Image (cartoon, rainbow, N blue to C red):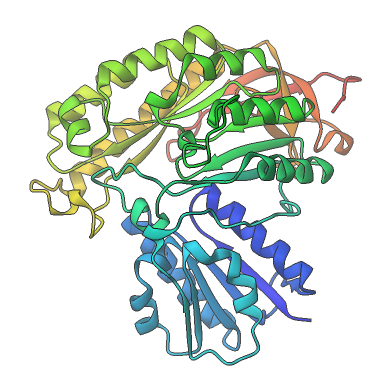
Length: 450
């Protein structure tokens, strides 16, 4: 009975895929290594979205090789797709590298008894026509499940390596999506996060039908109708893919959570054009206004990329001014990372690291301010909270409201993994090193319906 250890870096899609690996290994009679137990097989699901993520992936490989010197090493994910030869050079022992387009073959390759001096299941990711089938039984140790419905991206933004590591957009047919959601429901997950590399492109590669559209809106409608007791969230989406139809569906379906995470990247039109983003700051502003019109209580998160080549103080000031104006709830801020193979890697006027650090710090302070203002709007109100299955470091229950406010509160173990009403009672300032506001609530007793 082989013991397996899986390490996952990066995005929600990677998390889903690693859960599928665990399902496959367990079905083959393997068990997962616990704590400091030595593993027979190490799977490392890597990330390459930034240079830092690539460095972290290499570090994870070296660290796990030292911890499990006799284990078979299996490496997959975006860094392995991007830098397979670098891994071969770095590792002087039998190695199995599985490309993103062949992750459905990973468990079989890992369990193969034939010695592999080098096994590389790579293929050309750019020529993949179908998404890998990766069924998951359950997200162990997680209250909510992630459901990958799409892979790949056709956009080729000038800064992004992901289209080269994930290939073209490919969608999981709706019947298979509904089947996976039903499995999660049967396993007791009360919330499902619908995700993909470019989830707003869902269905565009699937065969068209005469009586219905294959798109993200239809997908979410069918999921919400099929499982009315389960909360659904939609992961990151592009601004020009947010339609009135999508917003109306979110407003109408009580189990479609009022939460949008939208990619802005820059608030300056010159930088947006150099990024090849396909919209203007004015169009983004209109999109956020439409979101607020349909969903006044929604959490609206925004991705921002700082220090893109050629970004001047004036360009950055335009980004800050736009974000200050927008009625958003939080920011995800990232410094630009030069990725060889992308168009932007060859651009002149790369921004010095110190300048990027200063700009990141400014926007992260704005993030704390946006969160505080959003949270304070709901002081004294009651919101439904999905309670996590573990307490926080202070022994409190924790969970997220429907509109993505993180709460901690006192309560019995019996309400874990259920949806309960909680009154938001306090919003305290974070520390200097962690400026995120801390939110507390009070459980409404005797109303613990799931």
